[in-house]
Length: 557
Image (cartoon, rainbow, N blue to C red; front, side):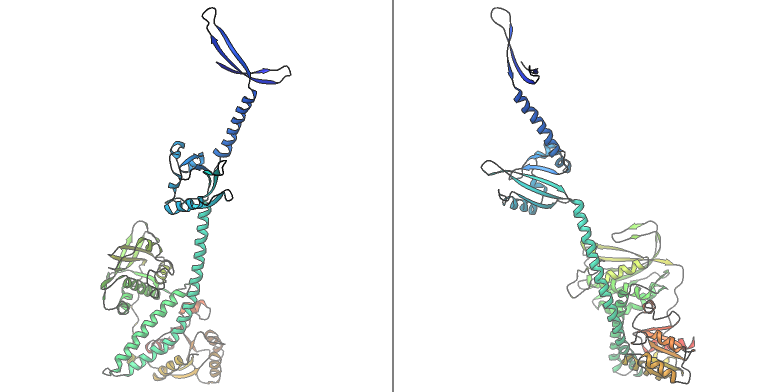
C-alpha cells in the first residue's frame, strides 16, 4: 500500500511523503507493517506541473474556435480538437478513424500533397484556402511540419479558420461589380443603339418614301413594280429593326394603349413569316373573344419578333412555331425561376417551338443581357433581355416550359382590361389620298428627306415653303405675308430645334398649326423636352401614305 501525505518540517515548510507499506506475516510471531518513507516532493511538483500543462493545453487547443489537427503524410489523423469534431459533426473516436484528405476533391488533394512535399526546416509552413466538397463552405488552412531530432518530418499540424462569410461577401461584391459593368455596357449600347436608329430612320424615310412614291406611279402591269415592292419590303424590315433599337435604347417612357393582341399578330404575321424563312411553318391559334391589354404597341411587336426569332434559332432544320393567345385566370400565386405570377385576370401570349429545348444551366441566365448560346456574330444576347424588361415594365410575367429535343414554350402574361381596343386606323390607297391647297412651312436639315416630303406635298396640291434649318425657316416665315397653315418640322436640328422654331413662329403666324417629324419616338422627344403633347407627330421612317394622311388630319383638326 502506498500513501501520499504532507509533513511539516521544523522550518515550517511542507514536503510530500510517499509512504510505501507492506504487511509482513512471519512464520512465528505477530504480523507487522514494514514501510519506507520517501521525500518525493519533486515528483509531486512534476505531476502538478503536468496537470497545469494539461489545463493550459485545453485552454489553448480544445477551447479554440479554430480547427486544429495533426496528421501523417498519408492524411491519417493523429489528433483533432473539439472544434474540428463540431465542424464535421463527428465524435472524437469517429474523427480519428478518418482520413483528412477525403474532405477534398482530387484536385484539392493534389494541391495539398504538392505543398507538403515542399516543406522543409527553412520553409516549414504554407497557407491555402479550400472549398468543402458540394458545400458553400470555405476554410483557410495553415499547415506546419513537425520534425524529429534528426530534422526529419514525422507529422504535420494544421490550423483551420472558417472564412465562409468572408468568401460569400467577396462573391457578392464580385457579382455586384459584374452587374455594374453589365449595366454600364447596357447604357453605352443603349445610347449607341438610339443614335444609330435615329440616323438610320432619316435614311429610311427617303428610301421607303421614294419607293412607295415610285410604286404608286407605276401601272399594275409594269414589270418594275415587283422590284420596287422588294425595296419596300426590305425597307419595312429595316424600319422594324430601328423600332427595336429605339425600344431597347430608351429608359423607357412608353406609350401604353388599349390593344388587342390578336390584331397585332395579324398585322405582323407577314413580317414574321419572312423572318423565319420557308423551312419553318408559322401557325397561329388565337382566342376569338380575347380581352384587351394596355401596352406600348412597338414593345408588343418587339416581344413577338424576338420570341419568334429565338424560336427560329432553336430549330435545326424544318419545324413549326405556334403563336397562341388565351384568356387566363390565375387563382393562386405561381413562383417561377424568373418571376412570380400573382393571382389576376390575364391575357396570355405564347410562342411555342419544336426545337432543341433549353438546358437548366442556360435557363438560369436566359434573360441576362449579352448572354447568348448562339455562335459568334449570330446573336447579341439582347433580344430576350429586352423582352423580359418590357414584360416587367408592363406589370406582366413570363413562364418558360422546355424539354430537351422537344422544344420550348414562352408564355407571357399581361394583365387584362375590360376596355375595348379600337379598330385599326383606315389606310388610304396612295391613289386615293386626300389632297389640299394650304401653305406648309417645311423645315428639315436632311436634304433627301426634305426633297421627298416636298415632292409628295406638292403633288397633292400644297404650297411649300422649304427651309434647311430653323433660322432659315423663321426668316422665310417673317417675309411671307400670306397665311402659313402648317409648320412641318424636324425635331432635332442645329442652332434651333423644332420646338424652339414653333415657339418663335407664334409671334409671326400665331394661327399656324404644328406637326413634328423625327427618328425618335414621340415619347422620347417629349422626355427630352423638345416636344409638347399638343403638337402633331410623325415618326420616321414614314411613307407617302403616312405623310399625306397625317398632314390632312392635322390641318382638319
